[in-house]
Length: 106
Image (tube, rainbow, N blue to C red; front, side, top):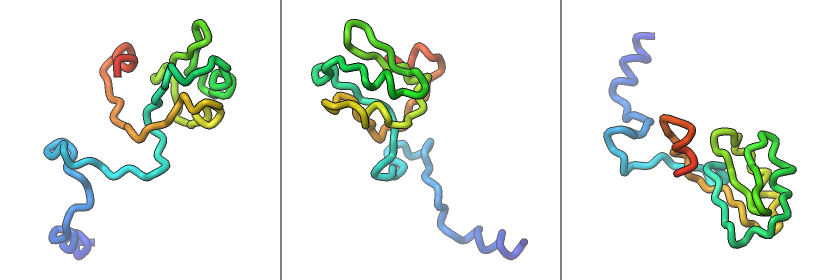
């Protein structure tokens, strides 16, 4: 065990220095499901996304939808069922806030 600890002292670190080097971003896989992007102009108001959302994170007012990212489980079912592709899943994963009310402004 001591031998393994000594060997690791001279190896290059595998982690990214996120706090000290904010320009160095973590590589994200191609199919990563992050924050939801919604194009209100492309939405036709079919509300299929509400029916397929298992977390109930999508609500509608006047045939347009709104998302509650604090309830979203990032499953991607809403983007798969949208016929006009008005909902897209981005690779943005930095959705850190102090209160739930700040999530809507991101």
